[in-house]
Image (cartoon, rainbow, N blue to C red):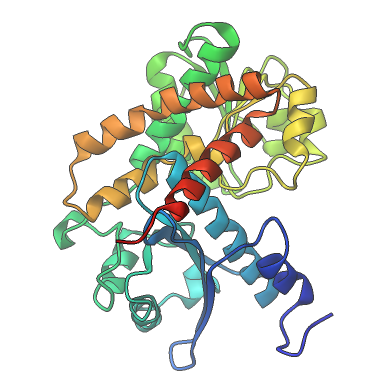
Length: 366
């Protein structure tokens, strides 16, 4: 079913009416010469210019791309609010296979579209885009972060993203077991790409037992070759059913926690880098009912956005690392709020983020 514009009715309902909507602006971008088809979604600018990455992905349909942009942008509003940043939430998706369709002309065209928003949206890297891509986008758009150090940027943000997830794990262990140490804990990491491989290194340094899986066999082989102590597992389904698993870290695409995976989980804690891990509302309650502690994804994976936001003010790695280290305290505060209010941690995090956005929106403009 579509409306008079040809857009899927469910997408428009999400945008204007549902609890998942409330977006300020959605921009559909097309450049026929380069083949660019993109969606830029701005969920909120209550706290400041919307900040979020650019995802380059071969979506099955344009409707799927719009829906993903809406969900990701909303998530960035909450992430930036919980990270204490003066930024709202936005996200962009480019439709296509980055291995086949990405080109300099396409990235430059995309940069012009971002620039046309006049600073309401600040972009960065995400799935399918890299530092080198942001260097190209920045040639047309000054509201670009995640650039290389040679071009005035901070470089790869996955380092601090992984560090923040690691801090979230430590906080989860502190809350559940009374000790933040991950030594001898059995931890399964699904997805060892940009962020996952850095996370594995943190865990190994602390003495954890690490199991890994990835849809790309070469990624698993690269980690196993570098760290022979890790244990490769056939697939995510096998990983989540592994007996004796203490912590499960989904670090690939969203929707990892759903009606199939949650009943099968053996881990006591879920804490990973993937965005939008809860496939639908209600999954957080299913986790709580099973006694599984869930560290909200947008809280623990905020290290990267902390880094790219700092780039706008003159990047300092140690300053960013200190801010990312506070994810430990923020995660503990969420668990405490959840216990106090008798709600799952995901709902507690939402309440805290919504309160900050609401208070910012009420401030008079000077």
